[in-house]
Image 1 (cartoon, rainbow, N blue to C red):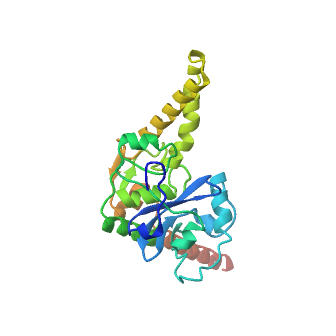
Image 2 (image 1 turned 30 degrees about the horizontal axis):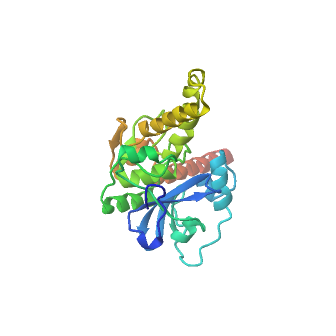
Image 3 (image 1 turned 120 degrees about the vertical axis):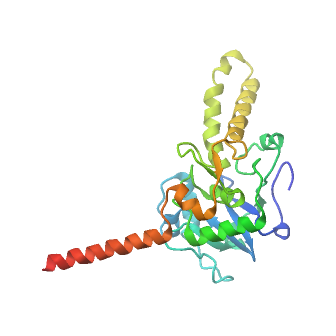
Length: 269
């Protein structure tokens, strides 16, 4: 890894690493936590695991690649997930899907962060110890990570939480994801810099101003500098995300089935 790229070799992998690979000809990146033993815990849209339908362009890319996924011939537990959960355990090969391997960087300086033009590659936030990272990933594999949301709760958000334990309390803005910040920040920077085109006749100057605003908007939404983040234990995560645990969902489904059976019995009477 270096200033220009976060690409790494498999031999460099360590348990607890936040890794990612690019999909759909570098259109977006998919993130996960390497937990050792050639296994990765990652977060995907739940409906993409069961069907090919999707509601957004990025999810369509994911759906097309995941819905046709064959059973892993190497690891029997590859693809394990709990019902009603998008958190999946995959082997490294199935996670990468022939793509290159990249390692997300933590604790980078502001200057290094700003030089990374593409979001979703690094953060100024510090990573927690490896044991804590793996504990969060494995706990969420069993208990879920809420509903997938391309802007507020995606695969990068999952990996960032596993590494830092930080949760954004502002539910109205974008999540922890650098990719989401880039998607929002690029058009925002273009809009904000448009008045400068009247003051700066040189197109290169306008482009420089736009690029600077884009980088600053990304930096302002980084979890390492935001003020609306709090440390949340993984055991309390469901409560803070305002989502139901897998056990709660199953209990409610059982209650609904019992109510339906009771109503059918009363109807027969």
